[in-house]
Amino acid sequence: MLYGAIEAGGTKFVCAVGTKDLEVIERIQIPTTTPIETMNNVIDFFKKHQEQLAAIGIGSFGPIDIHPNSATYGYITSTPKKAWQNFDFIGYLNKNLKELPIVFTTDVNAAAYGEYVAGNGKGRSTIVYYTIGTGIGGGALQNGTFVEGFSHPEMGHMLVRRHPVDTFKGVCPYHSDCLEGMASGPAIEQRTGMKGQELSVADPSWELEAYYIAQCVYNTTLLFSPDVIIFGGGVMKQAHLRERVQEALVGLMNHYVDYPAFENYVLPPKLGDDAGIIGCLALALEKSEKDIF
Image 1 (cartoon, rainbow, N blue to C red):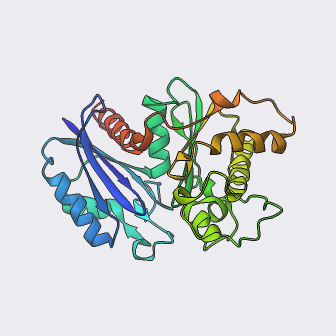
Image 2 (tube, rainbow, N blue to C red):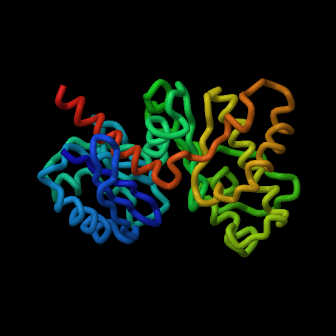
């Protein structure tokens, strides 16, 4: 049997099939355009493997409806991507593929799960995963279970304290100066006129970026006391950011609580850009085994 994975991002979809050992045997990338165009490409990919597929794990950009008893379960709901608002993701898959067991969660939950089963969260009881890139999102696991209630967390939209010298309005269309509004890739570009990867290491805007990410670590520490906080996404590929975040965190925490040594506590994803796909495969495998037993 094979297991399917869909990492549905705002810029691209990554689709893969893999084995029970979480080994990817085929994958493709599809640009995120309109729902019909994108999803038809997704369906074409999985139809080749349809007879062998046991389940599909989906990690989607959101917000999404994760509750099976809801009338809009499986929908992408109030996303800023207008073409995708109120799109019936699972319904479209079931209509165009044979109905399979499906796990539907957020893209960051899927990445968190990947790191939990095979990455820097393995063997830990509580982990939190953030991606900082085109958007910012976070997912948390406690003893293998996602932390969620009436919906999934939207950690990327936590409110943050504005840096004293930062006059930038923020890019979030809902909150302006939330974490995503102030620290995402588009925020860096609009604040500076340059993409993050084009900025000099000495550019003063990195101090602002570190300040907001350090607030994310501060808030997460006080809310969850996790064993580890993992940061993925394109922005965090700037290696110099870690030291800046560490310095800013010391000032923010101000000796209020003890927390693990930074080098063991705030980590990059061991699985790199594959965390989401591995997480989706692992969720699909777990779902199929539950359905069997």
